[in-house]
Image (cartoon, rainbow, N blue to C red):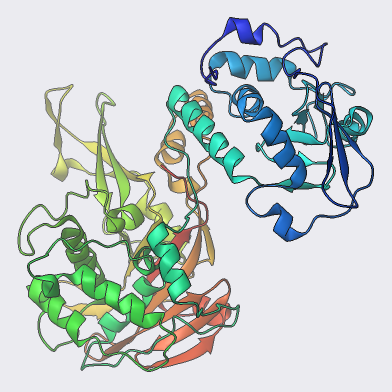
Length: 559
């Protein structure tokens, strides 16, 4: 009976005597010659030692998904039991005992170091580093296969390369799932692989569109239907959002309006993504999208110019509702508690800390957000023009700065049981994949309406770490608390972002026009002015009068 990797079998692992390499993996006596071709001759001896008379590079066809000929021979004789035991104890570590054993035993048998690139022989219990000691062991013992304990890859010394075998890969995935389950970790991320149906479709449609560095696939002009430049810019930004593009081009959407699919905005957006990336260069007309927005967001209906920011939020709201199947004109559209593609990409968490000035009691709430609106004018309380922000970082600094609410905005403190003055601070508790910043250039009051046209600089790459809750709160506390909080922070969090779209407003409130800059591929920028698309560079983008800024996270944490 095959031993499972997560079972602690004393009878089996009592045989793991590291001084005696043949204790666990000794096989019955074999002595037979197998002639593969004129270049290669393999001889089996006890315990499965391999002698190679001559070695020549193998053809790619010999590798394929079943590894090389040496791995095939190993698999035919030993199967998977040895591989599973080694992987479970020295690679995936499916138990606390396995982790202790790896920490104690995984050192090079010669230099007594833990690297670089430590390997374990698949024929015996021998650890060797890749600097030469594992190669010396393979040559001396004629053991041709070893396992990289960091990544679980099989190295064949005869082929002088790492080899892939689908059967062993499946065994590794199974063991990793067991390890994650035992450690309380989420499922392991797996890269996309085509299903059987998708494989059949790929075979039926052999033509492919090659995406090169200078390819223009994905660039489509949009016809202005009469004051619809605000809509065109938002559509350009959404269709060049990487994760949103991948979602729709992989046909992941399942319509929740089976009786009326023509009323589903998500279906229309999915159709637009297919149009954008079809390879055609003709300008598109968004009449169907505009009609659906008018239907489901009636406050935007009409032929007058609309605010691009308001249209962006309304579009996300309707897409969110239609992804979850909520009624188009009802339901809790702002709950943000679902796992739809809109919330996965755009939703973050904003932490609000209200501190009582009398007892220092803290009341904390966390609210979801799709974007951050940043003031550009003077601070209302002081009117000090010297503190007008000059950059996006200045805006974020002011947004996350503690604010004294004053005597006119007293709150009832739950500790004092009376109304007290307080301070309020907003910080980022959870960052979204796409961070959208709205620079509030339009001021509306009962007396006047004006546009703030001052230049606000913004970077191509943005680090949001200084504005996270634990960092901003640490600045207001003692250093001991700060040190302990930073120590508790998960090391995998990386809060760096890259700019991929900018929406600009030129002109005045009464006669203005929206344009957009979008990033195509890695460093190619284009200006989208309705149906006209022209090449741009990063200098043009960073010198523009930004209104909406879209940043994409550089590193993603898979849940």
